[in-house]
Length: 126
Image 1: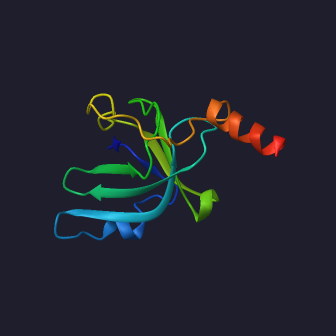
Image 2: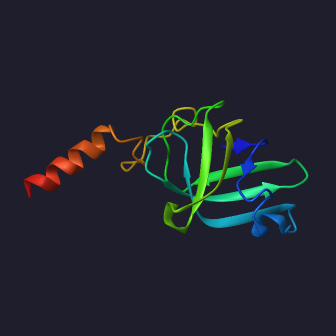
C-alpha cells in the first residue's frame, strides 16, 4: 500500500527513512502496521521514495481489505510506540486480481475474525 500524506508523530521522517540508497528509496524494518480498527498489528517493511514523496508499506502476510481512503498507522517497539499514520492512497493487487489462490494463513482482519474465534475456542477446549 502507498501513501503520500503521512503524518509523523515526531514531526519528520524517522532517521532510517531519511537515508537514501542507490535506488532512491530507503527502508525501515521491524515495523508493524494497522489498517483497520482493532486489527492485530501486521509485520511489514516500510520504504520511502524521496523523489516521489511516497511511503510504501509491504506486509509480510496478506492483509484483507486494504482500502484507499482509510488510514494506516505504523508502530515500533512491539506496538508500544506509534510512529505516525496517514491515508492509504493505493494498494497493491489482490490475490484474485493476480489469479493466485489465497495462502492458507492470512493475517486476521480484526477481533471478530472467524479464524481468531475458532483458534480461541480450540484453545479453551484443549
